Image (cartoon, rainbow, N blue to C red; front, top):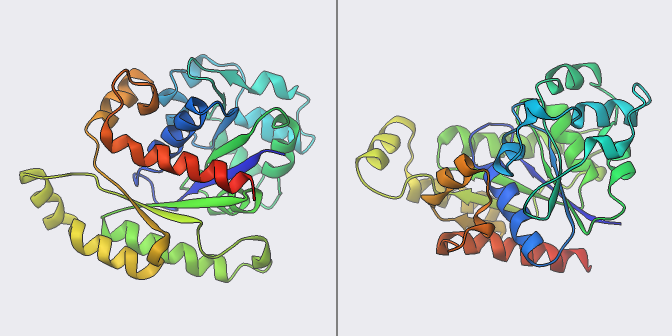
Length: 264
């Protein structure tokens, strides 16, 4: 059985997809068989792996519906190879309707069980806008990473998610505390940093202190990496750059951690 890891937050733009794609990339570099499940209706993880969701016939939409008997697609139709040794179940705009239609049904885990037999790791990039799907992604995972940035909305969202998990009726199925909280530095210096701190506060240093106060030694800092934009525009994870940026090595360490966790 593969090791499943979900990357989650209930707020968009925290760097969740960037973390999921680059951890998957380094797992592949370490000869692990990896499946990435793109839960985002915009398909950002799919694009970051060099595929165009609108050109693909099937996606997570079909996989979820077939998992609960509402479609008869073969699971192989929903899995696509990439140039980086990572297979992907792509996201698509149809997922907006899928998530509404399947609200209240436990569709993700049985759907994954149909496709994951040949993999060492399944990375789930959970959508931020559908709380019930986030809950499913957490239930399906052996480990989960909560990805934060320095905005006060992200900090509040992380604490709100913890409060929400405590209130789940079957909360024994989901750990309240993440395996790791990943804190993403988005801007490293200069006028843009000062502008961001003025608009969104509390600033990188203070935000990191708040996050560490909540998550303690579970917090891992993801340094700002200017090559992320290039990675996204080229559809290539940082792990597969000819010269891997030194800031990307933290994703490599996270991949090594997941390999270790899978042996537990």
